[in-house]
Length: 285
Length: 285
Image (cartoon, rainbow over the protein chains, first blue to last red):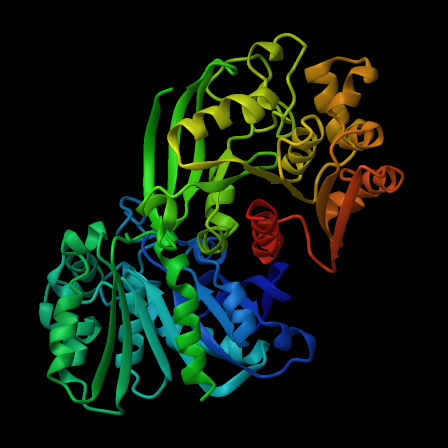
């Protein structure tokens, strides 16, 4: 698959790159970020790869510019890949009408409803096509793959892992939308992308997936700021996911509540090193 | 002086705040960032303060969002203040015609030419009014003040220090415009703000100021990426400043060239911790 290099910038002795490519699954051109740690640049040493999924309204740029992950990823020797949050450059009616549906709000599902089903297959893009592209073009270590994300992307990271037992050896989430079937953001997105039948939503809902999970044991590291307006506004509902996990021996959770932190990139930046270190520990084990 | 709190966000156990106030010197409202380390928030412990001056096109936001300075400033217990790069909300003919003159390009001088002289007094704002506002409103440690900056702001940091011997106990610069009288950016700005007589430029040119400096010994930490397009394009000319310093016993320079780094915030983010540590060492001595 052909990749077009948009930019490459030296960062912490590694390289922060941005690429563009044509996605067959999404049927449009997509942009993503790749950070290569020094070893992957210098002598193409194979490194574990961690995928970061961003939240509503983000492109690939927010995480790359604001989270400050590069320093710790360089030190730990991790490749970090972060895709965009929806198909781009397509032309669907209503795609730009709201910040929480359509452009910038793909919700990491495979849409079944017209017209979204033509392009909005972010789940397949993130779990299949993008890793193929990444493995073909960068020195990734086979079988060493992690995933994490923020808010809508935290939801994405959780469902990608829970729907594919064993595919990711490390999973974490900042302020994830943990039970989308039960919150306004999720209900709007799922109705639009998946239709009104809520039974069809359950395979895309982390809390529901945790309830039914009966495969390879999986640890989930959930991070949450206590002063997060969207926690208070009942959009995130981590308590539902934690309750479901508490009654399932196949799921282990680490939950860290951060006193006084909100939903912003300042919160992410404060704890990103801890997450990168967590992924490194599991992926380099 | 009255400060309006625009936002406060917890960051690395400290607080990243943004304030707005009316500047008498600039005769307009100005916005600036203040990071308070944990000790300054919790029990108002007096802390050294470091001023960061940004480059062309920036507002207060770029440094706050992209440099990742907060982690090291929190650890070192430094207050970090970063102003905007020009007067705002004024209405001067031509102020928005170019990225390198007028709005976002105040160049940290006191303009003498009409119409700029009415508002464009960033030098006095940064060295006098803003520190007064900061000292009145935050727990700063008297006599412990540093200054640094990037590109146009590196120039600003250098001239603020060189024109005020002893005022700043620590001075550093990322990719500073080191000899503005001799580069296109500086010549355009100085002609516009200071007039065509190049003799009047010399008091605002770091290389010229270094040549004539004969006061309290001053150390300058100059940082420069080797792959910086503006270095290659002769906008920065650090070699001129270093040559002038080499023949002046009152000026000591530390020069670090960073192989392969460009002019971006990725470069700043890579070395910001080293600069913060440098300021902390001198300010806490």
